[in-house]
Length: 339
Ligand code: FE2
Image (cartoon, rainbow, N blue to C red; front, side):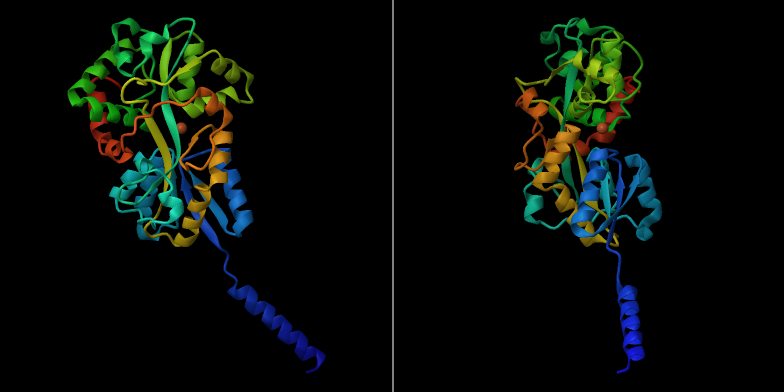
């Protein structure tokens, strides 16, 4: 073989390789908008060579998009800040059943879909926050107490449009019944210091500025504000106290963010690899340390701040049961005047 032939052969071989080389990728639709998630995606790419293409939007917008795209959707993994939206995706037939791998079965059953279509990724407690110098904690030791007479004009809540509040109300319906939940809403609404507005952080800012004395928020928002780069946020968070409600009965309501693989996922194998990676001990500890969420992998250690807040009794009701009550919760809340 002369030199020219060798060269040509080499060029052709290289061309053939580059033509057959497929870029491994995974397309993620996510309603979780945290820097921690993107850092984990980058680490996943570094470890596996699989590129993560991320589309971020509100969970309901992403659900709408998935429905419109139908079978042609490029989405592989759907991540939401509340598993209620995964439950909806599942009932719309959008999700594939997950394999019963060890890494999935390691997640406690209460944080997983009982039909196997989604799993929780992180857990959060929906706690009471209050201004300790203005209100005695014995007045607010349960969610039920928030509807009491002594809190007239002292309570604020974000809108019932919030998935977190819908889940909380669904837990009241399951535990106490529809009529008691209706009475609770009347009491809570009559205690409002202002119309529901803003997000969880805004409720804490309003308490710090004296608009109200007490509200309900997810734990990680308090953790993030305590560690915020913004001095004002740190001041607000430090001025508040946290209380885990219902410690002497059913426990504090918890919610979970989660993920599911799409039924028509073009890269379902990669989606499963990413899901396994996100549920690994190290990813779970990273999420807890950077975002102040509770791990759903029992082998992972929670962040120091969460350990300081202490062990609490959690309401162990199956999240599947709550998801089935969300529409009912929304209806009761609206008819009771909680917008
Ligand atoms: Fe959130």
